[in-house]
Amino acid sequence: MWVHSGSMGSTTEQTPWLAEGEEKRRFVRDMFADIAPSYDLLNDLMCFRLHHKWRKAAVRAVELREGDSALDVCCGTGDFLGPLRSAVGAQGRVVGTDFCPPMLAKARDKFKSAQLSVGDTCVLPIRNESFNAVTVGWGLRNVPDVSLALHEVVRVLKPGGRFVTVDMARPRSKFVGRMSEFTFHSVVPLLGRVFGKSKAYTYLPKSAERFMSREELSDAMRTAGLSDVRTKDFFLGNICMHWGVKP
Image 1 (cartoon, one colour):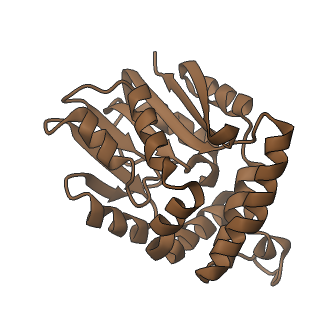
Image 2 (cartoon, rainbow, N blue to C red; image 1 turned 90 degrees about the vertical axis):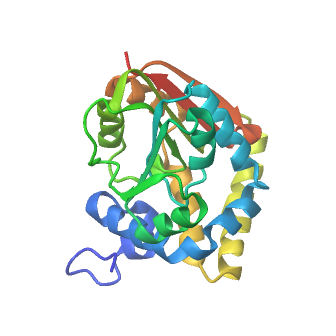
C-alpha cells in the first residue's frame, strides 16, 4: 500500500519514515488506525505516564481563561482534551481534530464533552480566527507538510491567541543522546513487537530522529506568523515544548 506506483518493494515500503507528501499522509493514517487499540497503553509505558504532566504544562503555556476556545489538532486519542476542558471551564469550547477515525473513536470514549471531528491539520475545516489556543502533542512530525500545518494553525488562531506543540527532541547532552538513541531504537521497537506492531514502533523513533531541531521548528513557527516563540525541555531533553503567540 505504501509503494510508489510501479515499484513493488520500493525503499519507502521498507522504510516508511522516509515517506513524504501524500504517501506519508496515507501511511500515517493507516498506521495509527492499526495501533489505536493499544496506543494509550504503549504511550504510558514508554514515558511512565509523564506525557500527562507535559500536556498540563503545555496548557498552562497557552494561558487559557474560563470561557475561551481551544483546538487540539492531531488529537489522537484525546489526552489534551481533559486539561483543555479544565482550563476553559464548562462555558468554554474544546474541539479536537484528527484524520484517523479509529483514534477519534478512542477519544470519544474518553471525553464525551469535547467536539471531535475528522480533519487534516494541513487543511483544517475551520474558519479563520476561531480559537484562543491551538495545541498539538506528538503530531507535527507526522504531518506531510509542517510549514503548511503551522500556517493553518496561525490562520485559525484569534489575534493574541497562542499555539503550543510538544514532541520528541534530540537531547542537548551527547551522553544522554547516545543513551536515548539506544533506548528508542531498541526498547521501543521491542515493545511494538510484543504487541504485534513492529513496523509502527520502528517508524515512531525513526520519525523522531528525522524531525526538525528545536531551532528549525522555532524558525518555522516564526515564518508561519508566530512571535515570542519559546522552548522548554522535558525528560532530559528528549521532549521539547515550543510555544508562541499570534500578534
